[in-house]
Length: 172
Image (cartoon, rainbow, N blue to C red; front, side, top):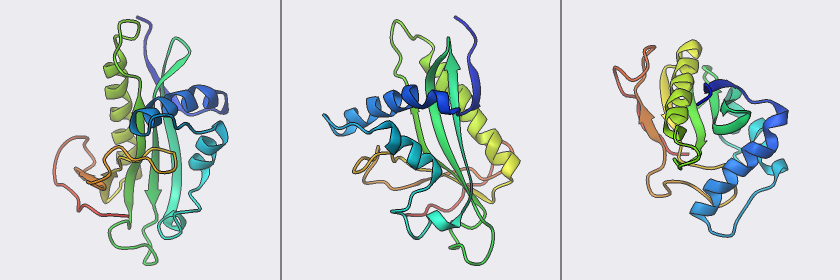
């Protein structure tokens, strides 16, 4: 199989990213899909989230690509460290959403793509030197979340991926 590459999202990825998001949205809410504009808007701002969205200092979207196809994507947020930011979000990094293709006979390395992308997310958190790390089960679509009853999940908070002290869970 051709090598996987993790890189920043490019505008040319928009249709493939939307297809990938819609694959997950339809699994949560059958018959529902989102437009390219909805996905692109989510990458820029979340105006409906009037409490935490103004606290975001940086946003980045990473994609895992293979054979010119986007096979996984993640949207990351870095929150400011100043006193205006709520304590649980202050100097935090978050995987706002994470989607990947399911394993299939025609895409046998989908799990490898997801693993590579997750490592890239954790490496970005380390570069940001975040105090705490979070992962959210939401999707960039209205009325859909991967884990509606659980809220956000805390991820270990160190500069080394997958080790060390765990952060404090928060809810939005």
